[in-house]
Amino acid sequence: MKAIVLEKLDSASPLEVTDIAVPAITNTEVLVKTVALSINPVDVKTLEDYKIVTDEQTIRASAAAVFDGVSPVILGWDLAGIVEAVGSKVTKFKVGDAVFGMVNFPGQGNVYAEYVAAPASHLALKPDNISFDEAAAATLAAVTAWQNLTRHYTVKQGDRILITAPTGGVGHYAVQMAKHLGAYVIAITQPASKALASSFGADEVLDYDTFDLDHAASLQLNLLLDLGGRLPATRFSRHLLPGAPVLYIPSAIPDKQLQHYRDQGLNVSYTIVHSEENAIDEIAQLLKDGSVVSQIDSVFDFTAMRVAFDAIHQGTTKGKIIIRMPQ
Image (tube, rainbow, N blue to C red):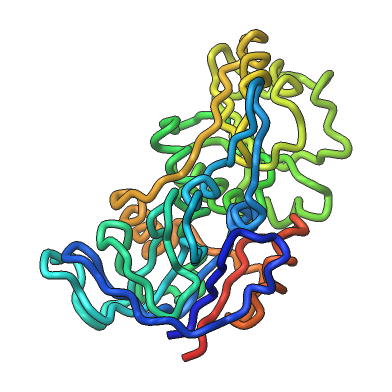
């Protein structure tokens, strides 16, 4: 089968396609023939062996850490495709089903491949009303948004939520999901992205360039979902109701910085997404009933993965970047 295989994590890798054997499946897995997959900033950070510096040490962050000592490496976690085989204990799917999901995150998803061995519990049936591209998009980014709004914090009717980077991969799902859950959604973004943020359902769209965080009337926030990491959490402190959480997504927060926030009375947490059966099934329902739609920024062929990485590295993606497998 076709796959992108790395001998080690290397930011300069050309990400070339090669041939390897089709993976075997366990009795709780299914073999998926990949139709489309999506990539995320974490894919780029993992390839670059992303690190954070704490007070005492340098730590390989999030997904990069799971590849310690692993060779060869196949990256990727997000896919949509067709079930080719099912393990003996799998009852959720049958051969021929169209499925999508986030595989083994954080861990080794091995998705940059023509065939993927995936735990059945990490997948959901693809709704008939959406494409494989749209399904592949609604995986890591969508699960991240959903877990932050329903697991790390439980959105209540009328909650006032501020979402930064509202038109990115996670952000555009977060705006739609927060609205679906009954929140009053305030987005803050660049001027060029205001109209798109509004189209996702934001009730207010603030302009980073003109909104005065330090002097404007308090936004009275129940939650700050910081997906961009552009400003320190202290800049938002006067807009947060007592105890309102700040959920921070873009990268791990060094211990010293996290303690500084807490010393300032801020309820700041860094959250990490994880594969979860209930979450992907719930997202499938949101896609089916039209409560959430996927915004596709661009589509690349599997042989152009390096170009796709360069595109996502620029940090200007609107929605998701999709990779299509040759069929």
